[in-house]
Amino acid sequence: MHNSETDFFGKQEGERILYVVKPHPLSLFFKLLKVYLIAFAVFLVLAILGTQLVFLNLFLVGGLIIAVLIAVIGTKVMTDYQKRDMAYITDRRLMRFEPTTLFATNPRSLTWDEVVKVKTYPPNALFKQMAIGNVVVHARTPARPDEHMPGAVAADDIELKDVYYYKDLGNYIDKILFTYKQKPKEMELIHAFIPKPKGERY
Image 1 (cartoon, rainbow, N blue to C red):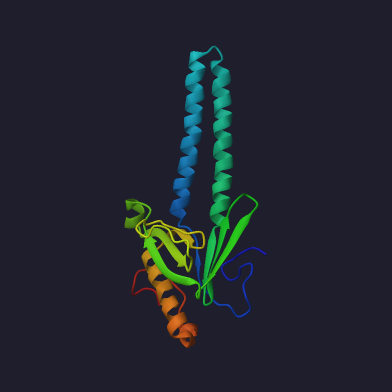
Image 2 (cartoon, helix red, strand yellow):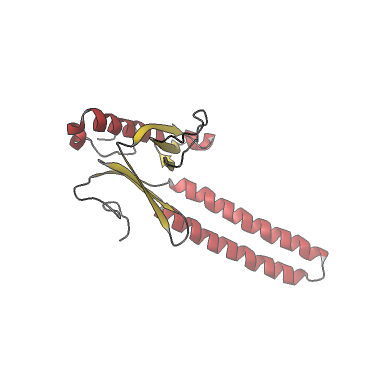
């Protein structure tokens, strides 16, 4: 079964999906940009080496072929990873599907009972201005990393990267935690998260 907007592998009967988390498309753009820059650098190095040797045409053609292969394979891999990188916020847990290889996706789950807190941080200044950042959901674990590091993630934690409206999503998860632990009967009243400015969500 393929994960979708309305269903995911391992979904429990009666479990309600509140939000499907996917990396912002801009993160794929920068990943592809890195791949293309690497491909161009490989071509450039081989072209420069070719000018120093008598096999200039061979190096140029070989460099072009290698660069195209890097670009094509890199595009396929990055696009596939981005497509499979999904997380589901439900009324019972946080379910994360993280691609590990081209053929394997690692599912991880944290029930709201296991979550102790949520942290948010932007990976860079550009993403911060565009309201794109990371959300770290900390699990109850003895192996806690350095609390002062913004991206400190323990083995049991779940990190959601390149999330649109990351601060609002962090606050939303905090609201779920409070409701789940303090007012469990009100969980069914929680609305789905909508990544829009305040005042435009409902």
